[in-house]
Length: 236
Length: 264
Image 1 (cartoon, chains in turn blue, green):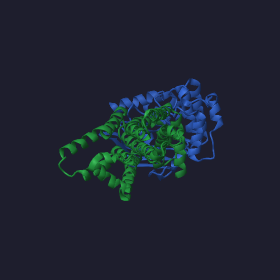
Image 2: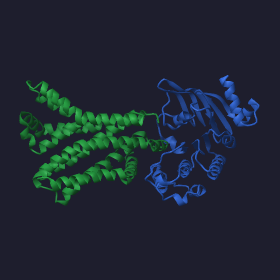
Image 3: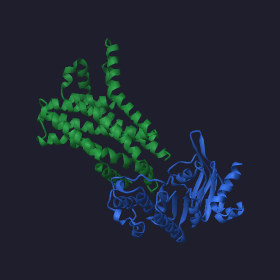
Image 4: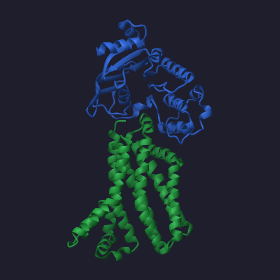
């Protein structure tokens, strides 16, 4: 369980998050939606400790994040567009993370095959296409069987086959009990993946709950229309 | 924690060593050192020429390359920050992972031509070693300053501009200001204030330490004598070494603090 409590984040004169209260339920896939600049990525970065909150708390399994980095051992993070060290090969990068995490566990071979990465393992990352690098990125996030998987626009740049593969893997991990937090602008994708959705607007959570409840509440046929209806209502 | 830092250093250093620019950097000093040794009249003069180039090029190249490196590594830094790694360890790993290969490239570039000649003129060996050590020290100083600049300025162009400004100030303008002060206060006993001013700029400090090693101080008149007496004493050497260590330690401490507090 992840709990954001009265979370605020200010960058200079701009309040990006203005008191976020949100509970992410364990073992479910939660999508964070909202227009550009709503604070989705900032929320993720605060959870990962990449940014520091101005005020408020984040609790992971009841433990307040206070600068201790050990909780991140259980988090897999797939950033939107990673710039990986271009001189290194994927094999070396995987080896490095294994080494850094100090886990005897190693790169999950099934993921390498699932993303058809084996022919590219020994090429420098700099010569790989953007989509292939995104697959390397996906593997890095999922290798260590995290209990929390954080995906920021995960399918951007992926071909349809890899995108489908990624979604299947996410759902399989959910079935094994992994909690997943995902942001995306592709509502159909979120509808396919998510149990819950949190709608963020102007740094505040305007709706949090099951996808089905949101569509019923807004009397819309799908998530995209439900979110659009919510936006129109909030802006009006 | 130390083991983790060593892992990070190895990882970053491997990445840096494979990139072309570090080979170009080492190649530049190799050609310069070889050329100067081949065409100068004696090793003392070679060390003076190499010293002049070192004091200009090492700070400039280090500031520019390290600033670009920090900006280029930013996304990868985020990836590493999402791992269960303490920020201070990551900072140490990133800093040493760049400063060590750059210092090694400088040492190898300047040192190999001397080694190929059996270590050079034995009378100048102290000066040669001083030159190499000072070049390496300046690499650590300016890498740390570049880390401070790049973590302070989110905008790449602004960061590079500030880095170039710092180089201009330390390598060129500072001397102009000191010369102006000397000219204006020529009638006053300014040797001691000058000594103090030397400590305020790592390039000047390195220059004075190198020149004193070459016994050129005799040509510098009374000021040279004052400098020679001060740096020649045990206390003076200790103070100079402490000052250089501070020039590394202070920006590293400031950079590490910035890195701990930074929002990525």
